[in-house]
Length: 439
Length: 139
Image (tube, rainbow over all chains, first blue to last red; front, side, top):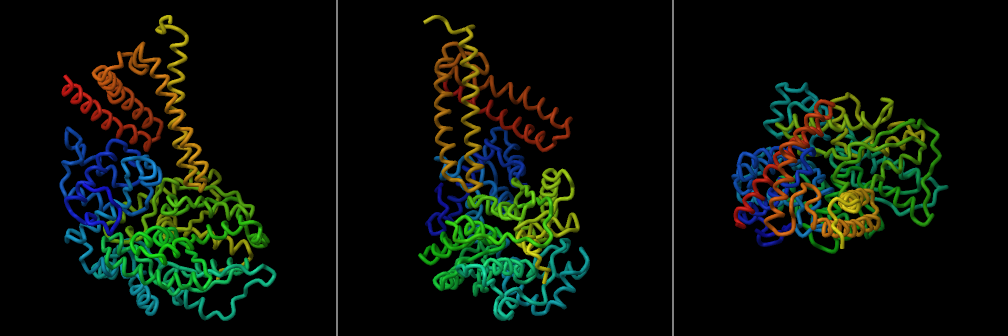
């Protein structure tokens, strides 16, 4: 087998080679078991290997390997503490990237559901979002129909979206439309003008939760940072996760061209969600392989991370700390798992501490189920992971009165399904703290 | 040199071996936390010192080997003895320690930790089987 995470490698989608590599890595995972609590991938894998007296992962069938791979929701947590990653150990294990390789192999050889129409629809988030937002009153009668209802079940047949999960409705006005049509941005003139940013809103913020994007812009403008809407579309993560490397690379290349132009025009790229930040910073350079992809990656930041990066930078920028609005006494912050491996730190928590709130973090071992969790048949796992997050928050908040925030829209949606309360994005809390009412 | 067995120094070496082994792993864990928090230089520092502590542990074991395995008390040194010591140690873990730990954790309501101990029972048993096969092939 070949140890490679390079999609251009000749053995990348070779079935025998990839399955051999899965065997090698699954053997190591079975011995280590450090990740057993993270998700269902590992307990399921260990049970299947444990059926054999010699505990040899080579005895797994291709179907069992595929079942393991299908349970991965691409949270990237198993790479964060893995003792065997390429930078730490000669075994050179990067399980999240191996899962993507396995998905690509399966798609190439037709072993994967990605050929089905529903997966294509689910991955075409820009198109689906645009149609949903354009016809929001009609679309919302379907997406907002009661769980398990006829309409939701029909929607599942067409799109693969869960008929049970309570998903946010389409907004009447898209985020980018709001940003483009709001006239001259009210950038504070008493704040030194900073490098402008192109806001890569992400599909959920663009089409369903634009209030997050609006508060990102208002907080940035409050701090002298002009904002424009990016011309780029969906990051393409759903194509990548489904193994359709060709379509993902095409989407990524288109976005790289647009984003690189925005960087050359002087913008930094800020993203209010960790999943898409990770894709732009880590996947685009690997799949598009161009100087422009490297340029985009080097200039892409999580929306909280960017403010803290500026705040610590030689004193040229100081975050406005005139918080005249409500500031919670205690805050619990969950940062989406995809950023943990980016060594970005808990920048959201650091940012919120500037308000004077006592900020604690939670859910460090809880993965973000992202787009994977939207699909039908995965509701139980999403609920189990969300409950772990809620339990982690409860454990971190002894008072029971803390405000919960998260930079992951998908995590917030899953928590809201359990608790009835949608956590704010950290920059929404900041906007309220500035005294800005929700628009 | 006088005999080491039964001396206070022997006990001290066993403690030193345990402490250095733990320091090695503690610093690896600290390094990972530093990585996540965005302190790569501190992570590198922890990793570098972890390597050193690992070296200390091995050196302590060099002295202890003359008396026996500090964990099982059995002879160690040549590969056959080392395999037997490994089998003995892993057997204690999967037959005694981890099942007992799992039971206690469950009794205390710490179910996730109980599950963790339970999963290790199976792994350690497989280690015994693999070491036993290694010993059989060596003979």
